[in-house]
Image 1 (tube, rainbow over the protein chains, first blue to last red):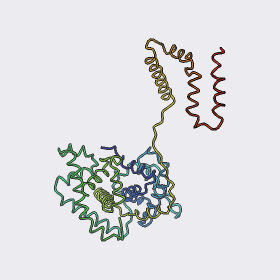
Image 2: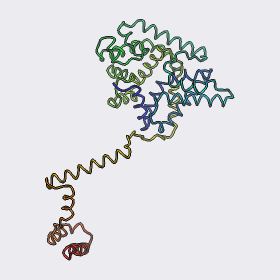
Image 3: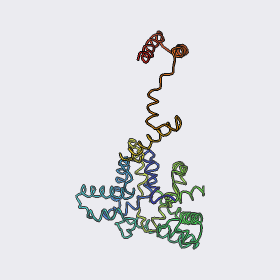
Image 4: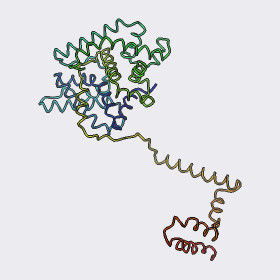
Amino acid sequence: MTGEREIDQQLVERVQRGDQRAFTLLVEKYQRKLGRLLGRMIRDQAEVEDVVQEAFIKAYRALPNFRGDSAFYTWLYRIGINTAKNHLVAMGRRPRLSNEVEIEDAENFEDANELRTQDTPETELMGKQIAQTVNNAMEALPKELKTAITLREIEGLSYEEIADLMNCPIGTVRSRIFRAREAIAEKLRPLLDTKADQRW
Amino acid sequence: MDEMKQQLSAMMDDELDLDANPHLLLAAKHSDDIAKSWAEYHLIGDALRHEAMQVDVTERVMQQLANEPTVLAPHPRIKTLSLPRYAAAASVAAVTLVGWMAWHGNTTSTPASVAQSIAKEPVAMTSEAFDNYLLAHAEYAPSNSLQRNRDVQLVAYSEPQRQ
């Protein structure tokens, strides 16, 4: 098993060697979390997307200077918060968060579940449809798959810890989590394909 | 394809080393199916954690990056040695070298005597041997250099004999 967030660092090093595709994987991974974080500062959904995009571009340009002293997502969230603050100042609005709260948010953001922004009716509907589809797919999973993916995605346990809890080999955990993801993705695809012009 | 997707699934959980499985990144680059799975799996995770804010800027970001000059450069992480560590390493290397020379030259010699014996050792090449060397390599030398080099060498070679 590799270290926590090692995959981010490996992707970052590839981007630093000129591999733009590796950066796409990081964008796909963090855009929603970054959007939720910035949604605390910026209410308008369209503006949030603009700022998220700008933050990723700034992060890309700054990546040669990223030394890996902090986790990539912490670094990215700080860029996002600064970008949002600059955006609000440019729009003549006052940033809503103090520095202390911002740093805490950036470093502990994965545990923050209460963040909300003002969605448009369309994006709100989409969000509800996705959540409903994922929940329904979860309920339909065999118990061992549901337990494995819950322990991984919600509890954040490693495969080794899940294997201990479920009393099975790590390879079985790996297979169960994959099968759970595929089963949920299968239910999700028609929804995502239908909304292909309104990507997530 | 399923095996690769399973590896991708493990990779996003930090349970598979990307450096040891570079084919996954290649697959993500060249297979829409794999790239789609990466996005879907992360969306599922975010949805389960109630983090699925409806943001998708991937296309917009990549379009913008396509117009950017490639300014990124390799930046390997090199572990630097501090000065005391360099000094210690150099000391160990020096002691090892002297010890090795002493062992192979004269097992009863001290490092100092080995150094003295090396310094006192006369040049072994004779004039005849040197001539043969120059003749053998004459075709590689520029014109007239054979005689000039020999003159220079003869003077230098005669020096120890005058002492």
